[in-house]
Every structure is written in C-alpha cells, then in structure tokens.
Length: 201
Image (cartoon, rainbow, N blue to C red; front, side):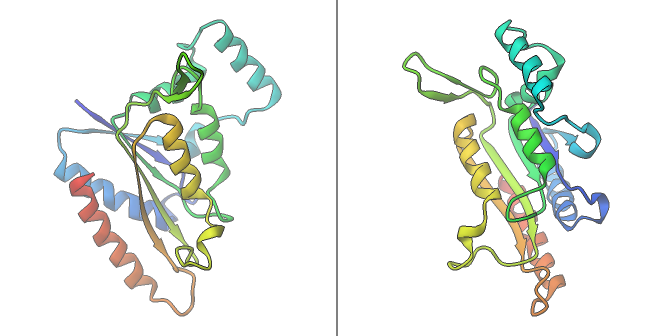
C-alpha cells in the first residue's frame, strides 16, 4: 500500500483556514484514492526541538557513528519513504510558521533524505514523486509586484530539488484579509481547485 504523508503545520488548529482547505483536499483525495494510506504528522503535537547546540551535537554524534536508525531520525525516515507528501502551512511573515522550519531542519539528514554521489554532487534520496504545499495568504503575493516577497513556497520548491522530489505543486487561496476581497468566494474557489487536484495528485 502506498502512503501519503500529511504534514500539518497549522498552528491555529481547527480555526485555521489553511487546515480547512487541506482537510477538504484530503477528503477528496481519500475518496478518489482508497488504496492509499494517509498518515498525518501534527507538528503542534510533535513539538520537535530546534537545532540547539546540544541537539545538534547529539545528532552529529549519532550520524558519525552510523546510527541512522536512532529515534531522533524518525521524522526524516518517515519523510523519505512517503510516496507523496502534502504540507499544510499558513503564510506567515512572508514564509511559514517556525514549527515547519524546525521540522525541515530535522528531516534534512544526509544519507536519509539526501546524499552525495562519488563526484560530490548532491542527490535526492526521498521516494516521493510529488509534494503539495497547501496555504492561505492574507494578501496577494502572486502579482508581479509582490511575488518577490514570497519565500515559503520558493523555499519548499528548492528543498524538493535537494530531496529528489521532481514535482512541486501549490494550492493557495490568497487575498483573504483584503477588505476589497470576497473571502467566501475565494475560499469556495480554492475548495473547488482542491477537489480537482485531488483526482490527479
């Protein structure tokens, strides 16, 4: 059975617009892909530690000793073996919440999610073919004059290249805090897009 890993980075929990959009996508995905097991990793429950000096020292010691089966690498191994990945993260401070950055640092482990070939070139070791970022934004950061300010999706797309995931996709509802916008219409359109995307993802 193939596995879709859902990484929940929605700090506001069930009040999150991003989580509502992600749940809608996953519901449609499960209906159209009953053969796929969906596993959720809730970063609010995980409370992974940042890479403080002592955390990094322990990680480096384990890695140097070849102990990649240590529980501290569980998140990285789970990410590497997933067939497809969905990350739900709201757009915060032009990027995403800090808990997602901590998670990304913890899964970026040489010889698990990426590595190097005999020539010293970086190679991706992750199994996933696709990674989907689901997000909501208060403003509109897809416009020519604002897209340069968006760093969350761009960072994840770059990491996909490092991890060896060939297909990065984005599902985004934006302009939700703009008083000139119709929030309900924007979310409804995004929900429709989620249903369509679920069929092919």
